[in-house]
Length: 212
Image (tube, rainbow, N blue to C red):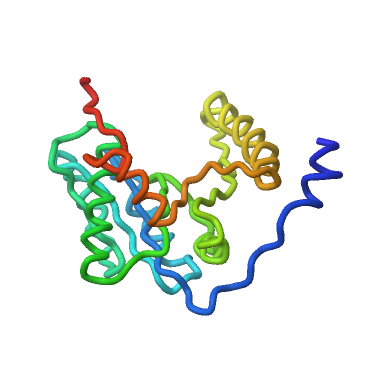
């Protein structure tokens, strides 16, 4: 803590300037059995995000009609529902592979995205997050923002565990990584994901079914 206060905070790089033209982002959200939360999550993100150019790609399964309906009910031109080819649950990687292919198809007809942003169905997304990514890319290939867990007082053991974990990882470890030449990311430039796809030509991310 003393090192963080005396060294890390002072070495942290300044926020880069805004780009001349705002970048276009693809936000991908894998969802299995998320009908209770995905609609509200998507609506809030669309209503509050302070960035002009982004699309949401939500992955759902053919046998999860409730989640599909929750996504369709949003009825916004910035939302793309991507239904996987196999019934769920499989794995998050499988759903992400379908989302990745949908992003590539969108790029073929509508221009390249600056980066791909990964979120979970229950996330409460900060309104300025895309603007922060826009400032840091392409100077950085990958960017991660800290997560603040929301405490559920009805489930103190679970939410308390997450609070402790994120306090350590995002209030300390992430600050150290920002100073050192190390990067762990949830937001990847399209070029970075393309490199992953070249390493594994069959898919951008490892794929296994849940029964394998």
